[in-house]
Image: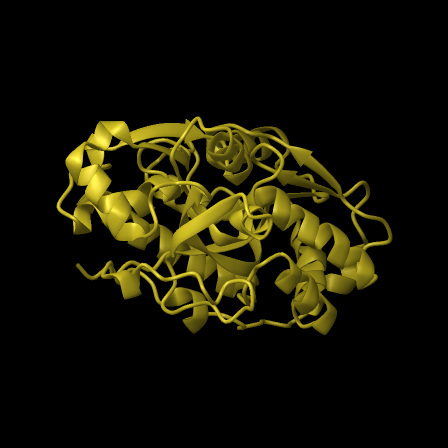
Amino acid sequence: MTFSLRNLALAASCLLVTTPLLAADSTEPKRPECIAPASPGGGFDLTCKLVQSALVNEKLLSKPMRVTYMPGGVGAVAYNAVVAQRPADAGTLVAWSSGSLLNLAQGKFGRFDENAVRWLAAVGTSYGAIAVKNDSPYKNLDDLVQALKKDPSKVVIGSGGTVGSQDWMQTALIAKAAGINPRDLRYVALEGGGEIATALLGGHIQVGSTDISDSMPHIQSGDMRLLAVFANERLDEPEMKDIPTAKEQGYDIVWPVVRGFYLGPKVSDAEYAWWKDAFDKLLASEEFAKLRDQRELFPFAMTGVELDTYVKKQVADYKLLAKEFGLIQ
C-alpha cells in the first residue's frame, strides 16, 4: 500500500515570508500566554515551552509567556474557548499540530472549522511513531502486526484521541496495509503524548501510537523503544539513526506532525502582524534552530498567508483520507 498524502514536511519546510506588515503599529502583548491544549508532558507542552524560551532569548518578548493547559478533545476545548470567549485576545497563542487539522477535517471541533482562527506560525515538525515498553515482546513492526492478526483484542493500543485521531490514523494505516480492519483494534483514548507514555510505562497499554519528539526522553532513559518512525527515511540525528522507518519494514506510510500556533479570530491586523514579525525573526535565528533541535523537532518554518494556505490544503487532504476510512460522509 502506498500512502502519499504528504511528502510535505520537508518539501514545504523553511519557506519564510518576512514582510513586517504593520508590525510597527503594535506593541508587545501584555501578559502573553501559550495554551497547550492537552495535559502536561506531550507535544503541545513541548511546542509552547520551545517558544517560551526562544522568544525571550531573542529579545522578542521582554518576559516569558505563561504556559497553561486546557486539555479536552485533543485541542477542541481550547479551540472553542478561544474562538467563542477570547477571540480578540492578542496575548493568547494556542499550540496546534497536524492532529488538530485532522480533527478539524472531521468536524470534531464542533461548530467551528479551519476558517475560525488566525493561523500564525509553524515552527517545526516531528514524525509519528509506534512505541513499546523496553521489555515488550514486540521487536519490530512485523511482530506487532502478527499479534494483531492473531487476536487484535489482546493488544491494547493507547493513542491521543479517539477513532479518527492522528494517532489512531497511524495504526489504522498499518492495520489496513496488513489486511486488518482498523475498527477491530483495541484502543484506549488518551490526552496527548504525556499520558500515552505514562500509560505505557505503567503497563496499562502495550503499544503507544505517538510521535518521536514526545518519545525521545523515554527512549534515552531506556524505558521505551520505538518499533517504527513514520518518516521517509531514517532521521539523521545521533540518537535517532537506529530507529527503523515503517517504509523500510514494508509499510509505506509517512506521517509528519507539524507544530505551530494560532491566534483568535478578532485579533487585529496590527497585533497579528506584530506576532508574525516576531516569528519570522525567530524562525530565521540560529539560536532557535538549536533550541528546536534540542526538543527533537525538525525544520518546518511557515507564517502568515503562506501558512493559512497550507493549513486549508492540509484540511482538504485530511477530509479525503477520513472519507477513505469511513470516518465522514
